[in-house]
Image (spheres, rainbow, N blue to C red):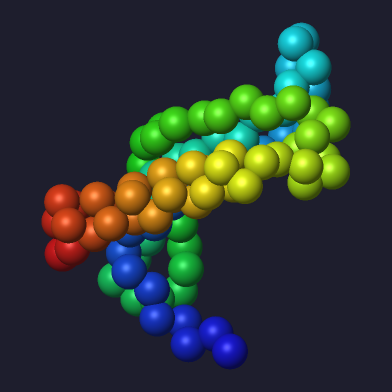
Length: 90
């Protein structure tokens, strides 16, 4: 169920399976903002947050360690909390 209720600020993750020269893939995490007052989900890039490189085969086969999955999830949730506390919501 999609209630369409959204905060004005968000975090987006994108990745490319384009292999880096070192045999890894990169996940890029950016901050986004809904530039409109309505909840039409028109997200625009705000700024770069971070990136993480993973071994290509391990990533594609979801063979990351439990710690790697947890660390990535923790960074996303921490960023969302930070954005909700310290960003102007007008």
